[in-house]
Amino acid sequence: MSNDIHSSDFLVIGTGLAGLLFAIKAAEHGKVTVLTKRTIMETATSMAQGGIAAVITDEDCFEKHIEDTMRVGDGLCHRSVVEEFVTAGPKIIGELVQMGVDFCKVEKGDEYELGLEGGHCERRVLHVKDHTGLDIQKAVVSTAKATSNITILEHHMAVNLVIHQDRVRGSYVLDVKSGEVKRFVAKATILATGGAGKVFLYTSNPEHATGDGIAMAYRVGATITNMEFCQFHPTLLYHHKIRSFLISEALRGEGAVLLGPDGKRFMDKYHEDAELAPRDVVARAIDNEMKRTGADHVWLDISFKNPEFVKDRFPAIYEECMKGGIDITKEPIPVVPAMHYVCGGIKTDTHGRTDVKGLYAVGETAGTGFHGANRMASNSLLEAAVLGHNAAEAVKETLEWDLDASLIAPWDPGEATDPDELVIITHMWDEIRRLMANYVGIVRSHKRLIRARNRIGFIQKEINQFYWDFMITPDLIELRNIAIVAELIIKMARMRKESRGAHYNIDYPEKSSQKVDTILKKSLVPID
Image (cartoon, rainbow, N blue to C red; front, side, top):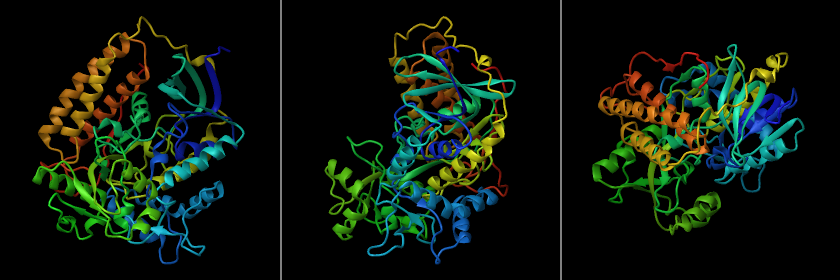
């Protein structure tokens, strides 16, 4: 067998909570190869501050969590999915604790210290100070590395999925360090590539959150759903040196208030829950205040709380802000809304199955119907864990399938040459992100979406020409993917003739009486 062919039962692309938990569970059934285009710790999971929502006290109940999720999802959550994921919460927490996640407990007690966040009627957010995701990531990484049957390869970037006879057989993968394109063959391919925040100019996401899994799945004919619901987190740190640093919603859960440029509180004018309103409401309110006053940011103030409490509860945020010269115990924090989470994605069932045989999706990459039109705070880690767990059961159905490496031809670069003007990639990347921020952001309109549609079409033609003319690079792969994701967001935003959840169109300000998901599916064609 050629040195560029790698075979395993299961191929996982992505190393966040969903991907690694899948790998840990699936390793009981067969051999697992896990790929990440950066390092294993560079994930959206690692950056999650708030926590993971689950019902674990007598004061709370599943029905409350279900109803909160349904309400925040603004009519589009699939109730059966919400019920399945919410009721799995306690078991998931138990598994994470067993792996070594040390969730905070009340002082001198065995009960967990639970946070309150927007949309929740009860305190149910388990956390590790304000660096919950990092601790979860460390735990699943440690467990995965200690699990036999798992091979982890860093700096390996998926280029295209390979489909043969209507079944995904694996992926072409760029070894970033050597520049070689390798073939990875598997009975089941699991996309766990996270979100697509880098499609927008301002985002809380990691630098490499470019929607790779969604774009690759769309190219092989998988159904994509509800991509218009791009959730903007209300409070990203606004600082000229510190980029993409989120100020957790948990601050507002502990009493922090939003102030306009005049120093006055404004959220009580927009929603009865004020700072604890759903994220779409808070983000639009901040956007409106900024446009109304001409300010380039607003303020989030928790300086009136006990300084020792603030430092103890939010150590990572305190330290990062101090690096930027902001003492959050003494002064308010400058914040702006930023693209945070894709509520839709590759359409799957609750076990990660897509409508393309052999292809599964988990985590933010998947569109399960759990979040509806707007994700409730701290439900994302819950969904990621449940999907990873469930998908590991589902893929047992593929174990009897053949694993014929000869079906994947060697990578053929054709007449491609080394790119001589990489600045073109940088320019197109920047143009897409500014285009999306200006025309497809928090507030949309019919005219803005048409402009965005027309421009993204021209840009994609340029990208495709560049893709065929030159040897692939990581930047080119990501550029190609964000262009496809941008196209999907624009098309689905134009399809939705209403305002609902995270999608707001000034030309269609009311909700429709029909509660339907948007779906797009590309005709299945030979891979590019």
